[in-house]
Image (cartoon, rainbow, N blue to C red; front, side, top):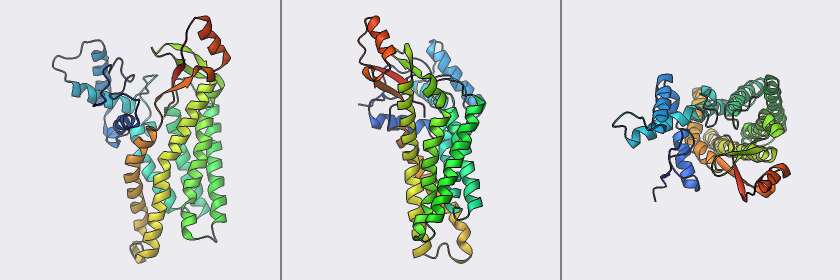
Length: 326
């Protein structure tokens, strides 16, 4: 089976090209969404894709429009517009910018990890980038107060820097590879603070939970916790291959070859950026695909109020659905 979704598309950004009930099809979907070539699309191309999908939805698309043209428009649309609010997302926050953005920042963190000023600078840059990504890819169109944005940003940056500086000192007497792995640990710790804090309003107010027809049943804090947990886990999975394997490769190049010796030490940064870029091209969509975008939660795990609402209306839904964000 090709996995093509027979219902696709009902509305722009609502139904992926492939059914999302298998990891393989989710990976195929996210390879299109995270394709770094999408960052080169112009505003007019993106707006044109949005307009074509709008016409297609109303059965008014230009005569002769092919399925592949609609698929291409959907790929462009999903790479730049929020799936629920329909807003055009900030470029640094788009999933298509994850590879070029992360490969540069992670490459620099892994290259300049020995001194405290370098740690401070690159962890700050990384958490600034993470804050933009987390805000852009929040669930729903919930507004996040500016004060909360700043608190989340500073808390995550402080946590990542503290972990990096502490571990850097602790690994001074250990083999060089231990020191090279410090940035990865700091990134993981920062994510565990940044994402929950940036999306704290979802935990406080809950996120929309929908029935199988897409109708909002209510707002659930428990669904929000599930969504944020899944996103945090997938972000750490996304970072792990590049941040963990690249230091091993670089340590081998440094200790077992002469590539980085003498006047060629400057090659460390571009080599690391290249390695991480290659790994992230695959790790980003594969990590995003671990959990379904339209996640489900058993009704018995939801708040009593939502369970009562369903029961009082005579409904027997076993599960409800929510957008987990990215």
